[in-house]
Amino acid sequence: MTLRLPSLALVLTLVVLTARAQTGTDKEAGPNKSAEVRTRVDSLPPADVKQAIELLKANYLNPDATTDSELDRAMLQGLLLRIAPGGQIVAPSAAANEEPSPFRTEILDGRIGYARLGSLVKSNVEELDAALENFASKSLKSAILDLRATPGSNDFDIAAELLKRFAPKGKILFTIKKPSTKENRIFTADDEPKFHGLLIVLAGRETTGAAEVAVAALRAHAKAMIVGQPTAGQGAEFAEMALPSGKMVRIAVAEITLPDAGQIFPKGVKPDIAVEMPDAQRMEILRLALEKGVGQFITDLERPRMNEAALVAGKTPELDALQAAQHNKPPAKSTLHDVVLQRAVDLIISIGIYENRALK
Image 1 (spheres, rainbow, N blue to C red):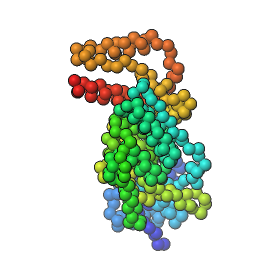
Image 2: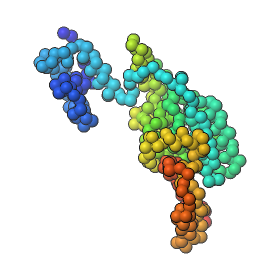
Image 3: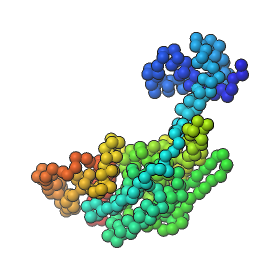
Image 4: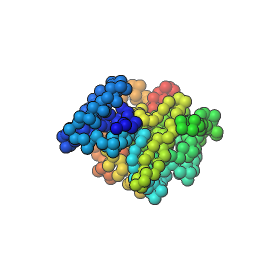
């Protein structure tokens, strides 16, 4: 029998399949075991790979586990495991029927502009323009851009439009490289930025696709600080292609690179300040914030301004007043606490104190 398309991925998965056939379960095969198998397979020269497959086919106690059909499945499974998250078998996309995530903005503590982008669509970017103009009219020097409610998207044109609001004119924002066609698309900032102050970007594990590219580019080109969790690691251009059954194979077809940040896929973007937050809590806060605003989920928002003279003297009357106020204040309206946004607000306030002291 002629063996078709032997590969290290095939061998890796074939070993796993035969182990399942022998034990009747894959509960014992955890991440450490899979990594060990892969390491051993990777250490084999090509001749050993081919011979190992032939020996398994000829001698394994369950011949049904090494048929051509099983080898094909093993090769596909092993390949998907190796290139993850660059290839997946998925149901037909329902994104077209999903409700768009709306844009929201507010001003926190009278001095910090907050904008929740929502979906990467033209109308939301236009609303962001209006919000940035409002921030400028109120002389706000700091802003928080929340991308945690931005669904995954392949719309890199809109992502570039978003970046143009913050990146210097003439800057190369990012490049899409498609190896199959040897074509590159270069996105450049062609206008002056609309915001020049301190920018904090909120992101997390749910931040993916074009939004993930925006996170990396904002840090590289607008000196934004990223607060939250590492992004999803899917900052690439994906295509969904139909299979005969109606299911889809989702494939990363182009990589995204930044001049000052390198590749985003498949490791994602690590935050400058890591803040863990349960997914269920994050989703509930984002849902409720659409109705009543996000300020209610920041417990330490209202605080006295720091007295520079007192700080120099080694006193902290503001902190003493804050502790007293917290001791006497009525119960909070919400028990939910947006720790990611809270950390961003604390960061802005701390940087403001430092800059004020530097000017003395």
